[in-house]
Length: 489
Image (cartoon, rainbow, N blue to C red; front, side, top):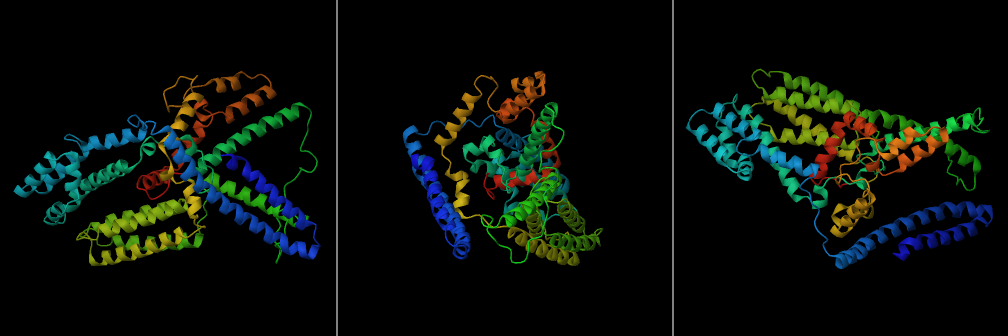
């Protein structure tokens, strides 16, 4: 623990001594050594962080567990995640909506003895047996015996039962801390590949604008009439000169040019994030070409749909993907949407499609599969050490319960039930409203913004607006997290 706290400072000082020594060398030697030294320092620190992360998780956390023991599993019975799964299970119960819809569909599609027998089995089965029967070879044989126009009716009622079974199975595999729902630390991540990056960006943006507005007002009240000298305009955006790779520590003009380019790049990215809700920028040619090809194939799938109704459903699925791709999706959502259409096609190549429609489906499957793989390759994949730094499997009960205890102490004087958070005006909100002068309001607003989100409400409308705008993005992250396809950060 001492080394983690103080060792970094000692290492930083050591590298600083080396760099200062290199700067004193003759220019022709210094200019060659300094860039290589900077890269070596970055590589060294990155490897050190990976080693320290592994040591901490294998050593410190293991020791905490040994000393504290399993200090009680998290109570998940009242968590939103648990309640949703309980609702899904109820829909598979004796009078549940999903079970009733499936039984009715079987009876209507097959009114004879075979249909009555299958409906009776579905009605009498326990929820677990119902899920198993819904995906069994026996039911597939029953479906194959139905007329072409009856089979889609039963499949429409069967798919939700299978999806419910999958959700329950996923939930059962989750550790207790995941069943308890996302923690504040999980939701407040601000790195660009976080599912909540767009929300974090907008809330930070609102906080910046609020504080800067009050600061500007306070300066005006103190007599300021405009920007300070040197801040009247904006930074220039100069193109990088050919062969320009000079170290800013040596070439101050290169540093100024880089600062200007970074300023404009950041400002442009900010506008894109406000519009799309994420930081990804997919290649426009890839998306435009894919949308054009999919549109033509969807038109082809609709042909002869009167005799082969599966073509109409295939076209709707293709149209759904086109809508997603036209909506400036994140790389994660675009990849997931392409993979989902490929999976759907693999499961629905049946007699409801004509030969031509099956050929179209095969072409679509190939296109979206290739697109999903290409999108997955965008960006630099994280290393094993970086992944381990936010791997939920490494998290111990002792560590999690310590976080809960700290949070409970922080909220102890508020008296709200665990996890509900502030919904009405709080003391921090009232302090802002009561401030009479601009400096008082500035101080109260800073206190409110930096306070724990459970103690304030200023962020709620921004978060709710972002969630409503990007339901598809958030839903896909939740699904993939519950399926174990992504880590929880």
